[in-house]
Image 1: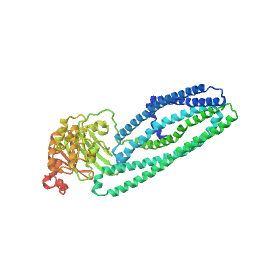
Image 2: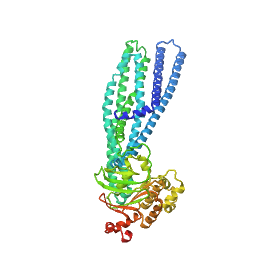
Image 3: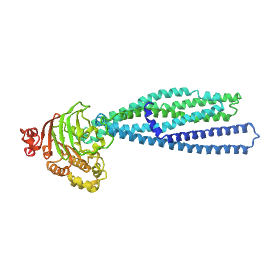
Image 4: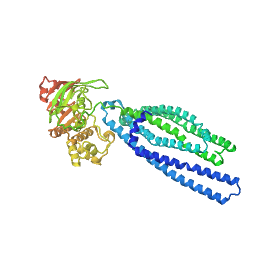
Length: 588
């Protein structure tokens, strides 16, 4: 139960609903206790009628009818309060589920890039959906029935004790066996539930990857192989689910057996006491009343197994949720107050090593980009170009050295102000499964249709969009699969432009367009970015030839820097580096 203590803050948050639910539960259970009493009295009346033939039949009928009406009224009232109990406690569990899902999602948002490299998307989804649902079952039904069981036990046993202390003790003799059985089965459920949830995450992750990469699977014609792999996972999942179900299935028969034993005890010892002329059991109505009380415990006792199962499953799920909630982001906001950012960027002996791979991506990088200037970053694959942009956005922090924005250390700026001041076009043009309009508006939620069309024209994608049947309202497939690679890149550029941030980072975002389209987009960007700090990462010299400054990276180091013309004049190194990649015409 240690892991489930995390949920206490939610029970405190909804304490009034919780306490009101407990109060209603107490009232409902007390009202229910009148039913066995009325039925016992009715049986006693019938017994007296049989024993005393002088009793008037009409009087007996009237008395029993009165008891019947009271039983009906009490049952309806008790049912109404039971309904209120469910409405109060189950609805509370939905509020807790809502809060917990939001908390997990919010925590996911602040975790660093390294976290997402270590964990698979399917596992993240499973914890925020399946695991949170298991936890809700604890906060709702498990808590409700636990309270209900406790109150029922206390009130029923008190009533039973008032009738016959000796018979009460006899009828409760099977309970120690019940407690031992619950303890043994619950521990096994906890173990098997954790294994099942872990396997379910693996299955979800596999399915998510296969659906995302379905084009690659079809292109390589490996559907049968992946189907076999999925089949192996589902067989393993079925085995673990069946193992859990087998243990869960033991609860019902165990509960029924023990309740049946209690009924036999009541009939046997109650009958003996009645025949002995005991003052406690002086009529058959008392025995019937006792049996009804015992059967009132049937569902609470039977629910102990189910509740115990819910608690064990919830604890296993909450343990998995807590595992992520305890994760601390590597990148922390060190300044709670908002920061104003103009756009000057300075790297001072910056080195950076990726923790997960231990690859040293950057080594003693130094450069300065003033507000309104454009910096071109060139280099072969793996030279560290994209790492520079990631450090500016503080997706990672430097291993050594400092980055300054407007002469302030980047770590002292408000993290959200920093990222709000940056528009990024990533190397992997990610688009959401939404309309093209909303994908572009992602950079500015209150953007007008005119603004959307304007940036789309600057990114040279407007004419492509207008060719679609639904134009800007065209809904894209997952990850923008509806569009071609070049169209996705240009929509991503439009999304960055509409944000109109003082810093613009372009990470090889024109690799999927032809040189003519690239030239036109760059010409549009030149005017748009004249008052913005712009960093352009590319493997094409043509993408950065209009930049104010250019740096060339190799193996994480700056091997040359200057303007386009300066680099062409310095021993032809600029040409030599790209001679194999670019035509002589493109270089010049």
